[in-house]
Amino acid sequence: MQKGIIDRFEGEYAIIEFYGKTKDVLRSELPAEVKPGDTLIFEEGKVMIDTEATASRKEEIDSLMDELFEE
Image (cartoon, rainbow, N blue to C red; front, side):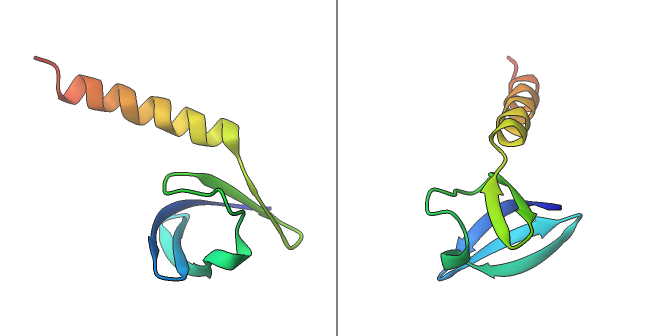
């Protein structure tokens, strides 16, 4: 099992970060509903969205943003 985070899309490719390094993956090989910031699980030729890890990262980022932009 390998996990990656979608950084962005460039044309027909998704740029996915795996342990600090990026890799281009054809968008057609991913679930249709993926979006930047989603955590993906790559296992035995299948790709799934890790909704728990995605939500956890979003909460952490939102918290950091709140701290950064406090008045």
